[in-house]
Image 1 (cartoon, rainbow, N blue to C red):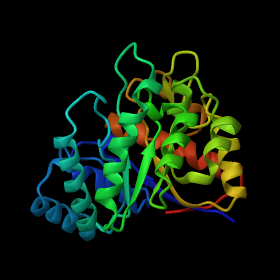
Image 2 (tube, rainbow, N blue to C red):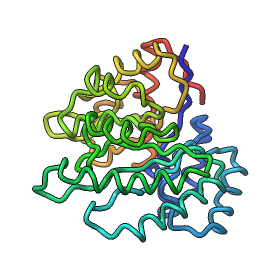
Image 3 (tube, rainbow, N blue to C red):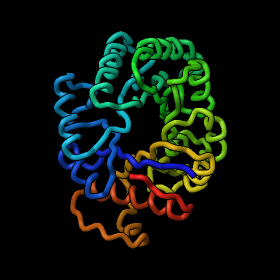
Image 4 (cartoon, rainbow, N blue to C red):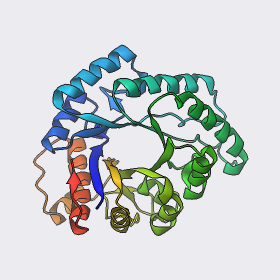
Length: 290
């Protein structure tokens, strides 16, 4: 039986950490994928400031499932040394936050350029990430993201197998694959199942690439999670709503018989995304371990 631990990108609820923590606690979610804290990316804080953030998390009983870092989310033709320095700083942040996972990317490809022409540059940079992380107790999670080298499952697999490292794994994001016009299940899953370590929960439509609640798009998330359950996955499902422009909120709220007596748009979207996930888990007979 799989063991799904629920986490969330709480900065999509509100930029203020105190609001993020309140909503997580109210929803019995004990982990957060920390990204934005009080309006600033966590990787831009000093180590002393991160220590204070950790105290605030501890006081509310919230642990960090992963650092949602922007590492690798720059152009492959942009200067790398400052970025590598930021990555090394992020490694120290992970230590303070007692966090095993750092979410990362594989560099945006210049518009009009074929991704494969940038392959060696991507691998060279990722090799330096791996070298820097060797003495740290972390796992580097590569996330598929539209427009970067590793946006398709084939190129994600290329990165993971080229690094050939037990602390370089995959964050699997169904919506991002849909936005690259790739079928999530079984196609992308079959290519990456041996590297799967962490899962982002969001869905999207092939028609216009818009993000929708899980189960209401083309990500085939129910079948995907059912199969992940069958292989006894033990890890995080990290809710990433991205529903800021979602037009069907009111209709879906009624359809799902949800009672959301909150005025804050970010909190509403978060609750909708959370309830959509829990509905799928209930349908496939899986318990969420919050």
